[in-house]
Amino acid sequence: MSDAIKVGFVPLSAAPRGILVVFCDDDLKLGPATAKALGGAVDLVKRAAAAAAFKGKSGAALDILAPEGVKATRLIVIGAGKATGLKANDLLKFGGVAASKLPSGTSAMTIMAELPGGAMTSEQAVAIASGLRLRTYKFDRYKTKKKEGEEGGTRADVSLAVGDAGAAKKAFASAGHVIDGVVIARDLVNEPPNVLFPEEFARRAGQLRKLGVKVEVLDVKAMQKLGMGALLGVGQGSARPSRTVIMRWDGGKKGEAPVAFVGKGVCFDTGGISIKPAGSMEDMKGDMGGAACVVGLMHALAARKAKVNVVGAIGLVENMPDGNAQRPGDIVTSMSGQTIEIINTDAEGRLVLADVLWYVARKAKPKFMVDLATLTGAIMVALGTEHAGMFSNNDELADRLLVAGVESGEKVWRMPLGPEYDKLIDSQFADMKNTGGRHGGSITAAQFLQRFVDGTPWAHLDIAGTAMGAPKTDINQSWGSGYGVRLLDRLVSDHYERK
Image (cartoon, rainbow, N blue to C red):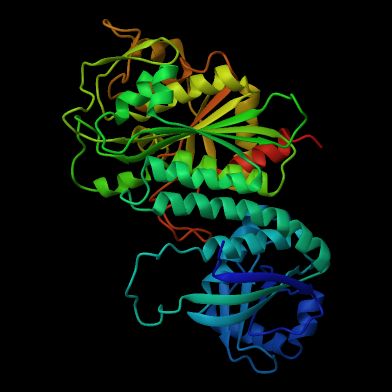
């Protein structure tokens, strides 16, 4: 896996190369090793800060070109605010801010991983390194012509000067696998739909075998035999055959029940017969953001050899308006045996998830299941793009996801479930209908999914606002965010790995 930057760790005493990045608090105080490295340039920082009204606010940056008295081409001072009680998300942001100062072309950068109180911990330094990698991600493989200055892209050799280079390097080896997982998820979401269709998606998921993941691909014939009528109904109008991919990582105790993650993988969604408006339909290449997250997560867990048994499952389809496409009014039979009246063919993701959730619940018998899906526009009306909507039948699992969301910065917000909402999807012709109408759309979608979890502890994450097209941040300048990989890796590492 290629990167725009190479990240390494050196002692705090190492001589800086290229651009020098240092940190100060909101009193412009520097760490002792930083002050020593700057020497007489400490006064230069104070003068430049006064001239630029730089106050050391968290994430703010002061850029000094050709600083006198320092062996550096540029000196960048990043504010750490109060510099006490910093969270991992703050350090990720600092890494992203530092990366934003890298020029086009090839360059070197040294980051003094020190706060006014002394050297950063290895975990803090690793968070900065992770922020660097996340910020410099680009998806431009299909551009044959680039703007002036972009021809060679940004290539950088970044050294983090730390208190314990060996410990930081060891910690980053594990954290780097998680960032690799995010990059995989971003790549999948960003790919055009003529390149990434169900069969190709399944092929790419199969590359996890190189890490020791067991990968099983169910074709249409196998799914017909299993009775996956809900999933197959969605894809029947496409020239591209549907697939379900089951991935297993056995890193825990033999025979111990796994944890499970399920992803919606609609590789392109026209809405089917209930066709979407043309405006922004191109964004529907990202309607497989849940499946992309699951593949990225399985990569992260296997690469860092997580001590847990995990099942990852993705349902891969295209929803197209062919003459053979599913119609409003059709009734399909799911793998569970429950029948579903199709009211709107654009409410297709829940049909895909219904069969995959049932398959995982019955076949794997997991401790819990978490599904991720770019499921409803309604969740964006409710929560915007800052939080994913979370629905759960299990308070313990929901609480752990909330904590993991705060720790990772991939935030979730719990939404309600209840019998009053559930009755909205009852059908007069079948066991249920696939939409409950306009009001509470994300809730009735979750109620639909709950009917297929077979009593398993379960959480549904509606990531329609966070997986694609979300506002750019200090650690993500890409259309596809890779949302969910860091969140769920944190959930597993905090609560479910065998220590």
